[in-house]
Length: 615
Image 1: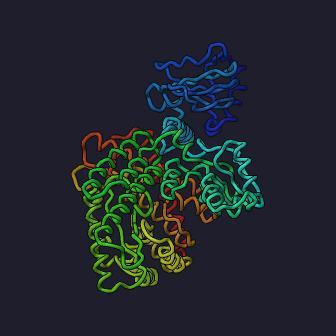
Image 2: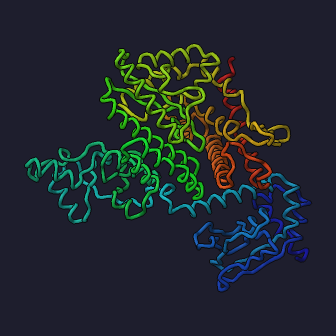
Image 3: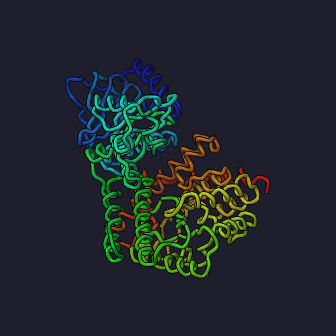
């Protein structure tokens, strides 16, 4: 470029992030190295040169970036960039850049781009994060047809058919016939009050000999089970299966925004996880359950290969574990007879949080409605031993710490469970705090919800705003730290062999679980899934939005790295573990992992300041 042309170009670069972080000297050098390209819409797409990668800076015009299958990845306009994935990865990236409008573009060569990254941390971080976002975005498109990553919003009918609460069933039937649908949502004061289906008309009107003047509210299903648009298709299918229903209203808050039917889902796609759960529910004995459970590792590999989100993989695998547990309980009750009292099978730890991965062992217990007599003790002992043994044979090994329902210590009445939790909270000794990391993440897998709620409500009433317990729990959570040392280099852990590695579970995911648990117990939040805890903490402004989103991203990224690493270990025929070898990572992934660990470190510091400042 001529000297007269440099100033306008420099001024343009100075208006862009991250060029605005460069020194004046670097900016001038960069400006001098730029070349200009003109791209005509008639050309169709930008001819990217794999042998000569460049950073493309859009001065004017518009582009679309697609993958090799033609799926849209990004749209670009003035001030946007493309080409940086090739610069960062050193590999030719299989994307196409389509020219939507005639465009003027500045080109920056690889050598200059690399020198600017070395000179400016902000410049380097910006493009690394942009590359990470691009790859995550591309992954979402690749996985969009997989049931486990698809959302109900892609299948539901929008603008649902509705009718006022005061209408008659004849009016409802007429508009259903006119719209050729099998259900209508009943609305009261702009809120969902119920749903009326063909089956309701048949069973509650015709079969009962009522006439068409019957008010719709007397025939509808009141307060129906409803889901949100971002619910996984898999989860909707599971709800339909569990409750034997074929219609699910879709709501945002209390406002109905759609309906999804079993026909919609079947038309859209089938579900491997749901088919596996269906198989589990059909088995008649332990031997057949063991045979079916051998499909679970393959399911995990398929989910990892499909690049499903770690949060979703955890929920899906846990749903399979839940189904297996319930089937073992049912089969053994057919042998032992009906239980002498209501009971709940409790899941703790990873199953409780719904974030199971490979290598999951058992953490469970039994909650009994009241103190058992000798007969009841014998019954529940036999049931627990049979179910725990069945889970072990299906691949969920016995808990090394013996936290299992077959241990009489963890088979108790509601009153005794309440007493145990009271002691842990009121006398937070080291052993109690160790138990807190397992037992306070609890969920009922089988049994009446009212019994479990009675236990959970008591626990949360004792932990909420309990400064002494929360300070002790925080102190216990800070005994481990993310693997960062001086200058943010990795601190490596030995995994029992001569090879060093990073423990992604205990020095990553578990620390985030600890942080979310402390905050949630302090606020009386019932949710135990870590990702959902973080979202609820953000919604309630207990953690500010920026910190919550950073923590959620770090949680997902570390968990995803752990699962992907386990997938590679399985494929290579190596023992599956939580340890990651840094030498197997690209410089980009190392950078991202360090950033994720830094988020955990900062969150630990914030937790310490909030809950331990007076101690």
